[in-house]
Length: 509
Image (cartoon, rainbow, N blue to C red; front, side):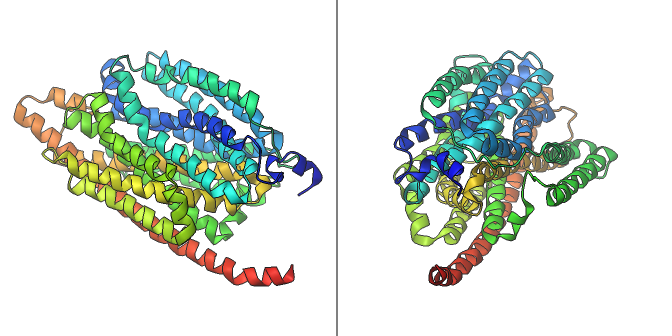
């Protein structure tokens, strides 16, 4: 580390920054606001369907516009934060996120809301890269695992508590308040960041890779567009195959560009590290299962089982409560320290897969008991509490400290991409199964129920949707389990390689 870099590194002092725990609270507040918007929209789907006449594809784009823009910009934002200052970009992210929330809350058409959500994604990208990067800078090695576990707890809480908070807001206000509520939080966070968070940067950091950002955003958008429109147009139609081909080609060009550009957004050589690859695989697939699952469950609770938004949110709460209880009591970090990263990831993701399977087989039908869904949510919460801190720590420890922003960008990109892909793929599986069981011309489940001519026909529509939900949850369970096993194998190899080389390094030293 150069002298200039050390001067800008608050963690260089023994024990880390003196106000590190207060700063952690501030950046977690900022992060919580961003993450809530990944899932808070789910409980507003009935309101958006009736008031804005949103179709299923519109709803998916309202969700994916946010996550895809964020995914495309996270790596660039990480590079910029490392070079120009993490505090500056954290403050800018809060300001942009607040402005985007204002535009979303006042939108009066689906197109305006999708555009506003994309704008919020820009601010969210700046926030997501800087929060974890700051954690890596202000905590030393002795406390970093615990700090990351608390950071991951907020991540899981924000992801899982969205339906509950959204339901509570919609119980008293119109749907726009789920966005306007972000504004005072963003203002408080902005003041706290300016007052408390220290500036840190790597003066030798690389220039932002704007071409890489453009290629990754275009490629992921095209692929997800093909997945979303597949059930509507047919998987072999030109409307699906053309964007799918374009997306794959652009993502391939992105990988090639990153290998040859002097200042890559994502150093492809990181993928030679088995620890990095294992954590990447696990992070994508656990968020794939979680994102798609929560997107579908909120609709099932309201459309099929008839719960009000707040009631649906309360029934989703055990997931968030389980994550918070386990990580705030230190169970997650202790398991990582005792078992090691690889076994911890394997156990955690197996539990997430078991939770998805429980929801599909016990709690997903029209006549099923809520207890099957409750069991699934608790299992998923335990799995998240165990696996997420381990994977985040593995990704960040595989990347040089001076590139903490890039590492945070990678971690955030994987989470957002997995979430967006889960919504698209599992939503497409549900739609395909639904279309195979009933013939309807409506573009959403509420419209199909409204168009049904009798109680028997409405029951068939509900049963078809529930069957589609069960199929999609099982697909998510298989994907998460496969990802967990792959991640565990790769992380285990990396840990064994590190142990094998450790004695030689100490002797050489």
